[in-house]
Length: 92
Image 1: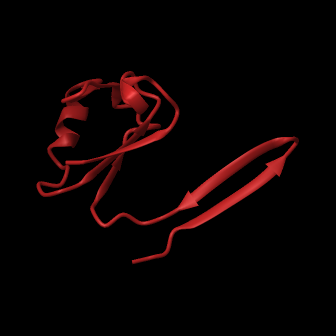
Image 2: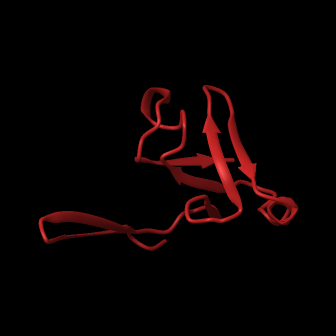
């Protein structure tokens, strides 16, 4: 397993951080995907709204065993059930 690396920089007064890491399970990232219309979390569910049947077909290619979904900024998915920009990881 590769070690986790954290990089940070300050440019024009803005501080940025970047993480380079590997997951144990296969991982699917929900951000920056034109096929994912919305993600909503409740106390017991994770609902992903897809844009069309092509997107639905792609989900059939998701791993059949354990895998990780990553996402941030979705309604109800942050700390204490609120929307936030913090990243979330769901092992399914």
